[in-house]
Amino acid sequence: MAKYKNFFVNLVTNLTIVIALSLWIAFPALAVTQKLQFNTPAGYTVKTTFSYDETQKPKMIRERGNGKTEVLDSLKISFYNPSGELMANYNNVVEGIATGTYFEFNFDPATQQILGKIDLGGESAGQMYLKGEAEGELSLIEVTQSGSEKVIDRVSIESSK
View (cartoon, helix red, strand yellow):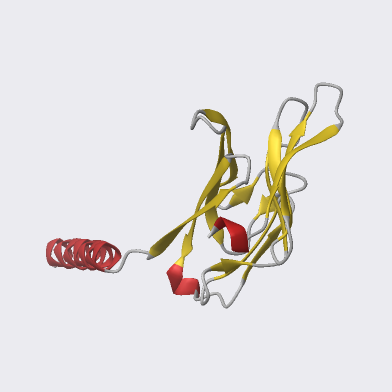
């Protein structure tokens, strides 16, 4: 009798594992990947790629500061000079963790537009970042070796479309 009981327990355990794996494979998390590009008047290009889990159905994506994010799974920003050469790139969010102290990102999934304050990229001497108000103007800024900020160029969201 114990032999049949062990067989039954093993059978139920294995079936449970198979069903769980089947559901996980059949219904994986639906990641949405978005790409944004901004072109400045002087010819610089800023490209941003970010992703989030669509099953959360966020009305707005509002992320700020370092640590665990509310919605974003990843966010990468790359800066290119007027010749198209990569100047710098930063992974501001990796596996749901924001790395920048000044990191700020607001995005409306319904309209596919960034909104509000933006602060993406590096933070230290020799690095660059994109900062400003989406409804106004974004500045491409380089942090000099002395730690001061130097505006390289500016772009309005309307002019970059």
